[in-house]
Length: 309
Ligand code: CP
Image (cartoon, rainbow, N blue to C red; front, side, top):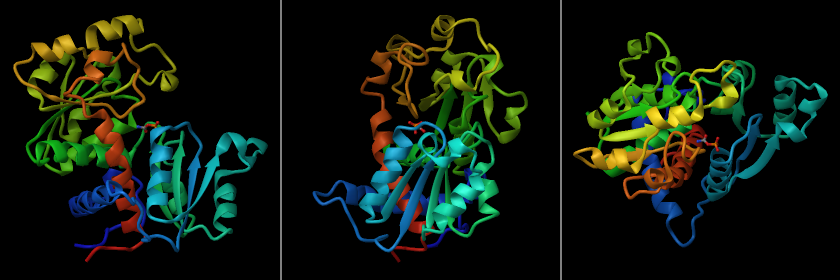
C-alpha cells in the first residue's frame, strides 16, 4: 500500500492498521532525511500549509512547522490570541478566509472536542488534528508508536502502561487506539477518579496501583495532570499525587527489569515524574520529540498524495 485510506487525519480511531504501518514506514525514510547535513527535500514545495493553534503548544506547533519547512512547503502560522477570533469571528469564517488565500492543508489544535471533524465536513482542504480538547492527539500517538517500535523492534505484544490523568488526556485515547490496533497490550494506571469508568471496553487493562503497572510493562508512558481541564478536584493535593502516583528513579530501580520511560510533554517535574527518572538513561522523551518531526513529515507527505513507490 502506498496511499492512506483517508483525506484527513482526524483521529487514530478513523484510520486503519495499513495506514499506521504506512505512516511509520514513511517516517523512517524522513528520519534519515532529517539526520543528513542538508535536512530538506523539495517534496511539498508546491503546497501552502496553515498551522491554526487555538490552544497553547510548544512541541506540536514547532514540530509541524519544522516538518513543513523540511518538506519545502510554504507555511502560515496562526495564533488565535492575536487574531480576529478575539473580535468574534467564527471558526468556519476564519478557516474559509485563510483557505481563500489558496492554502492547501490545515493543521489545527483546538480546545473543543470535534472541532477538526466539524471543519472536515465543511471544507475541501486536508485537515490534520493537532489535538482537540480531551479527545484525540493522533500525531502524538503515531510518534509514540514509532518511538516504541524504534527501541523495541516491534509493537505487537509489547506491554505499554499509560500512567496518570487518563480522564483528561487526548494522548491517552489516541495511544489506546493506536497501540491496540497494532497488537500491543495496554494497561492504564492512576487514581480511580482520573480513569474513566468502563474504559476496559477499549481493550485495555486497568489498575490503580502504579507499581503493579510498572512491574507488568515494557514501556511506561507517563502523563501530566491536566489541571487546566479539571473543573473539580480529583485528588487532594499535587504533593499527595506525587507521593502515591509519581514515578521516581527509586521506583524504577526497584523493578527487576529496565523499562522504557516516555512522556508526551510538557513535564511537571516532581509531580507525575521526578527529574532523575525523566532524565535517566531509560527515558526516551527527547527521542519522541525528534521522531515527531519525521512522523509529521510523513503524514503531510502522504495526505498530499505523495509516495516513495
Ligand atoms: N505533546 C504535546 O502536545 O505538547 P505541546 O502541548 O507542547 O504541543
